[in-house]
Image 1: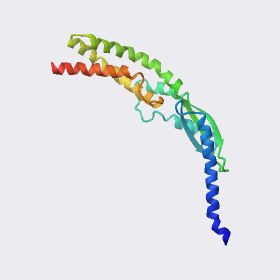
Image 2 (image 1 turned 90 degrees about the vertical axis):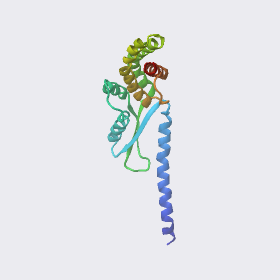
Image 3 (image 1 turned 90 degrees about the horizontal axis):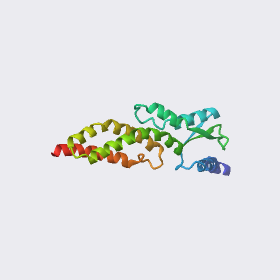
Image 4 (image 1 turned 135 degrees about the vertical axis):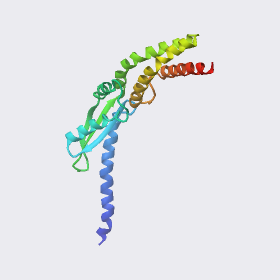
Length: 193
């Protein structure tokens, strides 16, 4: 009779011990991959290979909420090809489950994006300088009309960059800020005059 009183307590202790064991393992595994340097995903499944596959699939969903734009599929595929499963283990509590940890190192992924910025930013900077130094408002307008496509491409890159970057800020933010400012000022000056 007395033993039945303690069964719920014993089950609770057993469950807590099992959960805390996996929590300790997770903390240990994650400590090797700090958030500042890595994007991480942990997945569990009944089979080891399934857990590994699902972890990679999960981390490759990084850009799923962003629209596809000109060249984005190839660029994103190149970035996501850097993802890898770095750890896998069986649940410590005897549960028949496997866990897998997939990571994407932030710095190499961000470096992949730099050539794309290099194809846009010099053009934006050149147009911004021309707008800011030109006295003739119609020539400024001519330069400003060339900017929207470049600004849109830059915004698309920045949306991806912010997903990868630890700071979640655009790449060299002053470039796009100055370009937008020059663009808007041009049209404002036309309206006023």
